[in-house]
Length: 168
Image 1 (cartoon, rainbow, N blue to C red):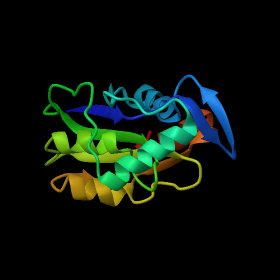
Image 2 (image 1 turned 60 degrees about the vertical axis):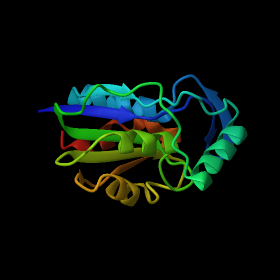
Image 3 (image 1 turned 180 degrees about the vertical axis):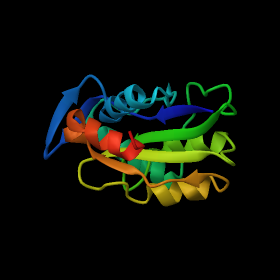
Image 4 (image 1 turned 30 degrees about the horizontal axis):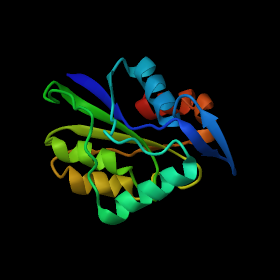
């Protein structure tokens, strides 16, 4: 069976070890592409119709508001089906202790019964937060395996950790 890497990532102004910096590719996307090189899995980017602000402080305010409202932002598109995949690698930055709400939208769109979900997240100190338990709650028929937390500011050097996590 095939594998899919579904991920949410945000470029633009981001937080790096106490400072704001503009980046052209989001940290989670960098990790997802490393994972694709290692596994050969298909790649799908989770994108809301209405993107978060390019400004970091506005973005985190929007993300927190979405979380408080338990919002499910509409996505631009979905894979046609997940039937052909037995393993889903799910990537996201840690927003307020869990996944960004567009990832919740993605997870609730499909039935993950019988699938393996392997979460990975980028963060600047908060690790996976409660995202693994949120995935278990949203995907009760799936087997959620131990996730990988990657320091966002060090994502360029994460390939060895990703390989170990994948068992490669």
